[in-house]
Image (cartoon, rainbow, N blue to C red; front, side):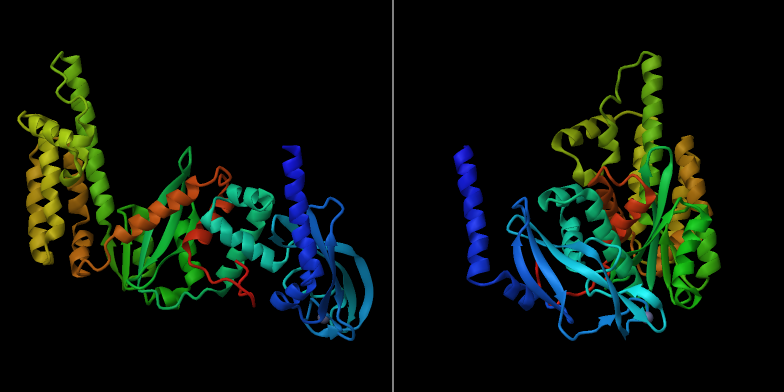
Length: 437
Ligand SMILES: [Zn+2]
């Protein structure tokens, strides 16, 4: 085994020597990552033979550029040599070694020079950060760090850089429709407010707010600004009160649509309550456990039931149970979404609520009261000609949940915010002159 390992390593080194000897690494770098004002001088293995080090020098006669005002300035002195990480190559980490100059600038005083594709603070080149960030969208951050022999923190730094750049350079113009929703991100009622663009041609995450308060949703409108907010025509949301107030205040011109997905979810929750309570009551009173294993039979859409569940449901429907009556009310309500005319949909809604209020099933009556209170907003769904259904919001929210699940490192708000923007905001990214990956 040891011998095979040695041979493999020897082969790998031989390959690099072949390149350094035949086609110089420096030549390749000049071809794919040319830096104005600088030259690659010499490439060699680092002392551990696991890294490749490339010396970088200022091009002869090229003046240093002030990092403050971006103008050429006379040199002052040199700082100690620093390593800037570049894209790894055949399993070797690659570093540029460079002694940054300080310049004596007429405007800025004695400051460090500007280095292309890197800044004074990062140990990593722009190309390397873009490389890690792009992989961090396909893999989890942990997997990215492991795959490219780097640390989770460096992957996080890379994502932060790309997200910051993207947020500074994105354009928020011509947003017609937005959807707002919340997701729980940690135990103990920690929620995020997410705002999405849900136009037919463009769906993306626009805003991540901490908590689900009026202030967090208003934060979005602060970033957007009043002129752009005034152009929004449709807002799709849950029935949560903070949303309703902010929408009324900030986009009074927009048609506010209540989310179909949330209405269905609320109804399922009520039905589940009815079923659980009735099941408990029957057990206490010593009845046959009719409702055992009935949960998914009544919660799932009919077309999604397994053969066995269908059979179980048919059996269940023979009994005069509260659960069965609640189930029938819920199924009946599906028809609401099939109307085209707001008038007819409104009549159906009124009739359904009337029926439900006479059902003597408290959780369902509560739903009916909520729907009645939001009648106008519910009917907006039809006025918008069903153009903006919440399906889009639901889909984006599911992606957000996947992003959250993909790493255990996303526990703090800031990290989670970065991860969400990175995977869902369709942010622009700085471009490199060469496609490295
Ligand atoms: Zn300057």
